[in-house]
Each structure stands twice: as C-alpha cells, then as structure tokens.
Length: 80
Image 1 (cartoon, rainbow, N blue to C red):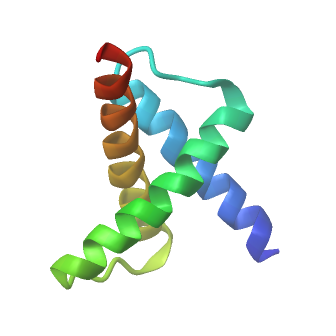
Image 2 (cartoon, rainbow, N blue to C red; image 1 turned 120 degrees about the vertical axis):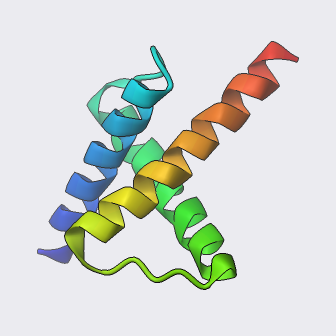
C-alpha cells in the first residue's frame, strides 16, 4: 500500500511542478518520475535546512518544491 501512496504523491507533485513551471508537464508517467526525483531533492534540501515535513501534505509540499527545482535546473540546462 505504501508504494501506491508514494506513486500518488509523485504524480501530484510532478503535476503541480509542471503547473508552476508553465508547460513543463510530462504526462502521468513523467509526472510520477519528476515527483519522485523531486521528493528526493526536496527531502535532501529540507534535511540540510533542518526542516521536517510530516504527513501527506508535508510530503506533497516537499516533493513539489524539489520537483520545481528539478524542472528549473532542466530548463536552464536546455537553454545552454
């Protein structure tokens, strides 16, 4: 059951990040992948800052912030 929740959080975070970054949506599978990578990035950054995000909403926020950062970096690399 945990893996299903993990995938749902990844999909939501990827979709939100794509919405924030205007036109960076990748479809359902792409959003899940972006959300999962974003969760790793967000968790790492929040850990460095000493911030602990608990619960479902905290996980979605952490993953979304990480996914937005990931999409921002990808956009910068594509421009170069």
